[in-house]
Image (cartoon, rainbow, N blue to C red; front, side, top):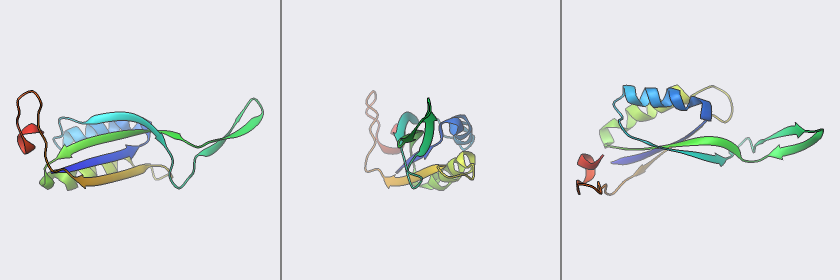
Length: 112
């Protein structure tokens, strides 16, 4: 099993959610986060004063899936979150050793 974490622009959340539903993903965790990458934020002017916004608002989506579904999930996220502009985000794929559903005690693929 793998955990797929995607950091995306907030306005792309619905597109990504729909794309994941289309490839059969029934559950995910979504968190509002802040961060920056290579662009190091941007400058804004407020009441005549210029200041740097270091941490930009982003959305983090987390999905745990069986190994065979990972490429479909990554492709769905990448295609639906892409704007072609800087700051589109990142996708991270990491191994998951074990999954346990608290309510029933089911494990691994049965618990997803």
